[in-house]
Image 1 (cartoon, helix red, strand yellow):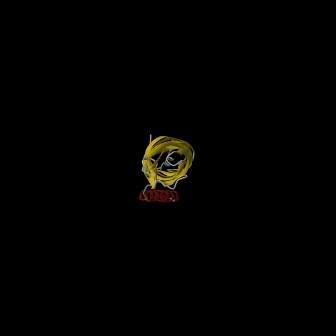
Image 2 (image 1 turned 60 degrees about the vertical axis):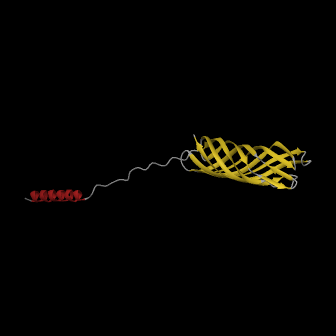
Length: 204
């Protein structure tokens, strides 16, 4: 009789536990969230830019300034956070100034530069420097004279990846087009310019 009572009590306990377990909703697990891939700066790119240029003509009182714009192209290599590569650009510029009887203008210029920086995922901080070249035109009354001057450039900027293929940047450059002899001034003249520009790039 005692064994029957013990068995009955055990059966009731098991059944009770089963009933309680049936009332507990099943445990759910959050779906696995994949870690986002790091932004890739690697590869070729092509873009456009627009900015403002201001500076001064060496050995002359003129201070050419104006809006400029153009194209850039380059290639990035990436190793971890470190990004480095090469970039070239070509620009058309409205920069000019008149200080009677002289007028100096910088109709176009370009650069060929190295770039190196540190990427914080889709934000790239970089420095840049290299070769600069461009046309410097001097006028004195009815006389006009143009030379293509060589020089150097250095600068820095920040670029932000907006999508895997598109990025936007802001950049400052200092350009020094070295002196060349001008008969319209009787002196050696060059151009020292500051550039602030905004651009967009498309990565392939």
